[in-house]
Amino acid sequence: MGGSETRDIEYAALPSQKRFHESAARFKGFSGPIGSGKSQALCQEAIKLSYQNPGRTGLIGAPTYPMLRDATVAALLEALVKNGIPHDVNRAENFLVMKETRSKILFRAVEEFERLRGSNLAWFGLDELTYTSEEAWLRLEGRLRDPKAARLCGFAVWTPKGYDWVYERFVAEHIDGYEVVAAQAFENRHLLERVPDYYERLKSSYDARFYQQEVLGQYLHLHAGRVYYAFEREKNVAEVKVDQKRALLWALDFNVDPMCSVVAQIEGDGVLVLDEIVLSRSTTQQACEEFQNRFPEHGAGLKVYADASGAHMQTTGTSDLGVLKKFFRSGEYGVVDFRVPRSNPAVRDRLMVVNVAFERMKIDARCKELIKDLEQVAYKENTQVIDKDRDPKRTHLSDALGYLVWQELRVGEKVGERGKRLI
Image (cartoon, rainbow, N blue to C red; front, side, top):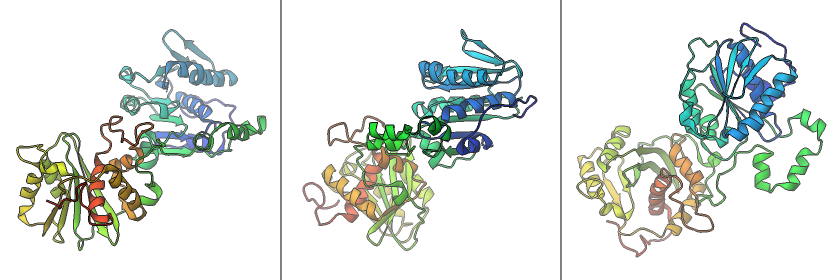
């Protein structure tokens, strides 16, 4: 299996498992439905890396200690015994030593990720990554630094659980050094030979949505009560470029942390979202400076959108609207039109207009936080009230987009709840 020691292993890898093991990525993942051989892939990869890194230390982790003990470690020990691989287990300190290579494998629950700081690792592998925090994964990335390792590698296996951080990091963002292998439903011939009706039984037991996620391994939206239910990543995300002949549209949600805004243009009866600006603990003045940094000049004009509170709110010594007007006096953007209503539209009406607009809206893939908003912002359970407490980063960019869409694409002349004119 490589390194200074070799050993034959009884393991008939499925096609997706084989691709996973052959991947040379520094960080790699195996995504698949239940019954797709994820646990076996995790254990075999751990054994392989312990032989490729003789005398070095690796780590196997799971979200909680009971899961680690009852599932992950049990599966590894079963594979070692089945293949006659000599090893010593230290149950008191939760590690084992591979006798042929003197490699050590630590067993750790990662729910308390602060405890993951410590010595260098040659490799690590995590089970059920979608039930693990991103902070735990990042802590382990930081520990992957053994200078004597022959093959540094971090890997994980999981069943999809919506458009969460695992999806963003491994599937959506195409981060350098990352690779994911997706197992296909019904691929595990070994399982089907033993239990031919395995998947049919599950189909009769699960509801349609749960069956799609758990058995077919599909990535579904996290929340059934999504606010922006009409947004679809496959339909609405595409490369968008600035048209120098069209006015720029800049929509802000005034908030100190984070200060959020989106930049867009209108094409026909549709919206093209070019970019997002997300600044931590910033002022309106700093937001203006960042906008100018990204879009230094644009003679075709500029329209600025915000909610009605911008005329009165103060993140600095004057109103936010006043800061905007003062900043754009210099003329690099031609005529600047400030489209800030005296009163806001009803939230329900604004959301309806935005959901309709997704039929003719394209959003550039660089707008990662906006896309997360549109996929994750949800109503509180059994209500029509937006849940703004679940994640403080959410709702701000989608609100900014909503101010713009309401002004540009709604039907009729009404502006604000009381029909007031724009400022």
